[in-house]
Length: 239
Image 1 (cartoon, rainbow, N blue to C red):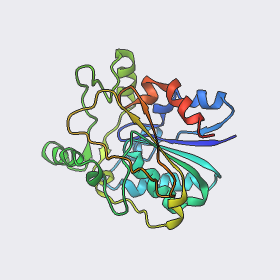
Image 2: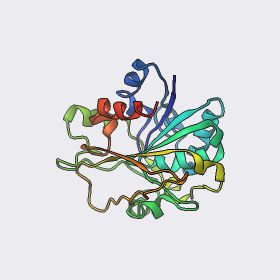
Image 3: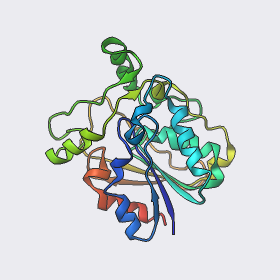
Image 4: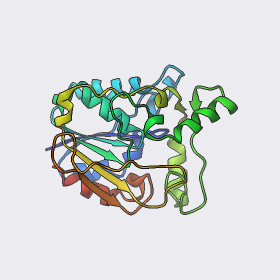
């Protein structure tokens, strides 16, 4: 039995994984899909002091009670899982970057995905300055985070919360050599992508010295909602 820890991205909550969790569990594995501070059942904790460090601590606290975890981070959560693995590398058997930000030591989300700065600027111009509201739905094929089915869009919209600006401004900490030994897998969603969103090329060799593993899903960004079966099949290859 493998333990999967599934970490949602910006604006979302742990409910984003509701279609993936039962598929992994049916295959005999244990699955944890927490909501980060400020989202889902922790929405009431949302505030200007919440940042990347808060979310890293959420996952580190969870990992301290686990062993041999496959840690999956979607989108912004690539920042979270990278720094969490840096803190407790002995608890992590594998990292999965699911259409995710992949930082270097000291980089912020703005460094990894420069379009994030425009979100910060909008928060300062049109709001209270410390939070970014969820992105609006776009015409097909972009939809809401790549989700276009009306029922699914409504479901996703119902789980979204504002994203604190500090999450985009605090740097990742990747200074523990032991974390470099953790195998990495990258899963890219290669459906329609909004203008301004960029993806760094994955180096041919991953930090542990082995060839990089990159898989693709022909769907939009929220693949756990649009292609849960196919995503689960990929994750099960790692067990």
